[in-house]
Length: 196
Length: 157
Image (cartoon, rainbow over the protein chains, first blue to last red):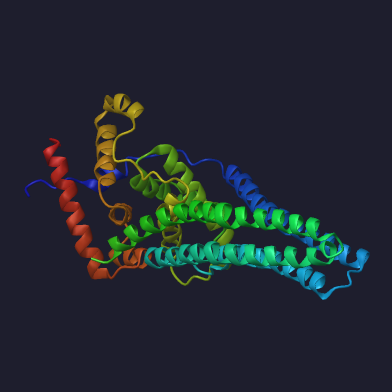
């Protein structure tokens, strides 16, 4: 090669005005409050539901053990939904020192795999617990109805659960996983560039 | 070191790195902004495990690599349309646009490595930022530079 092109010289011709630092502060604060708001809204709404269910227990004083188990299972289902949701936020903020790019990609891949697992398994567990809980809870009240009405009530409830289980649940899982899986493929691709 | 000094010292550098990665002024500005938001948040936790420059470039590189999370489209390797007409004004601009274009045709990790090299980081620092061995980085830089030089020659510079 006779001539050496001075790439560095060309590179350094790129000049751009440094934006005002205040703009950055505003943006950062906005982002911070937005993610905090999301966390609060989800937690508070589920907490209110739990309080409401607790109130039903206190106010109507159910007699049968099935009702009580039903209520507990329903609350458990909601807590199970809440735990990984909150954990996700601590995973995002936990990082102490910035990892190098290789480690960063590996962490991202791990995080995505955990999310795939959570969304598949946790969503199913959530549905099972919620259905069982509501089914048990209803028993006390249904048992006071005539047999025909009891069967109709349970038939409708089971039909509703079936729609959830066989239609809504797989649809939600496929949709969420499709997004995660494309990201996983992209991150794997980047990670492979690190080998060689 | 206080944040505003860091911001003033490193904005240009980080922007150029992002520009090398994304080949798009707006995208690069966004990436640089995101980088500095992270720097601002993490600065109180920074304990001089590495030099401040290495640390900032780590954040910048990771921000670039994570970008696909937000936008599935990868940075394009073509010159943006509106720039194509404007850039031919001066030779300097033409050269820098062509350089970005050539870099954008490289693999993502290579884009980061060459941008850091052009930003005058030494190979040890680049190895620390990217997480590859120094030897590996040296080989990669050599190969990338060869590719770029050939493209420039073909283009008649």
